[in-house]
Image (cartoon, rainbow, N blue to C red):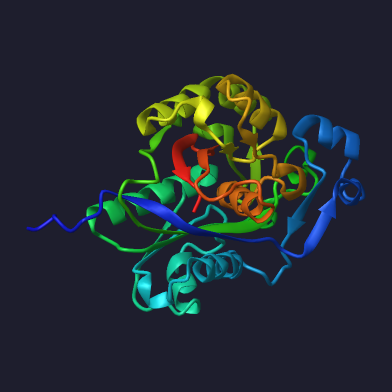
Length: 317
């Protein structure tokens, strides 16, 4: 066995994103359920979100975001040898999303699998991609978070239908020396797995207050541990990009970081909670607005149903 040619680590080469065209405001939702703009913004910080059309699927959105990331990376499809799709909203268990996405993007015969770590899914998938590159199992990996949460919403439940949305975000990962994706810190609180689940096997339900307390008390140490493993101080961060679950959660964790210079992702205000898509979607949009120049140091923190969590530091390409 010769491991001398394996890289020291991995880096993100490019990001891509996709949002459906259909914008739904809080005023639009107030026509369907007992709520209003002030109630929604005061509790979760959302002004509007995007919903996919009925014929638009998780795979469709993943292809759109993945295609943008691939084009931005400058790599031809035949340079990708592994595709990972993070999703918890694929309506069919078989076939998986990743193989279909790869075929539609013209990626021939890659390794292909899906990851379901709910809203932490992109961070899990990014870590798997980094490890695959570092160990020599893959040279370039396409990682995508894609979710169509509108398929799983009870439109009479204002505690959930005002929060969740649809979209996709993607990243291309390749070799790097030195590494530009830090070690992951991940875990789960399975004793609380029943706090977010599918009610009647068709409606997404969560115990909001319990989840809020867990996220705002238990996840700050995870973020700090990821910084320590990467050898990065909070004062060195360009941005903190947590899962866009709820603006109050995002800001509560950010306050504990003691990184006043860091840009805090607040994509939830106009995108809603897109589960595993939220971190790459927020990153791609921040890059597009010029907020994250090349070389920026970012802390990503994913968390969600399971209850699962994962954090890592990465540099912006």
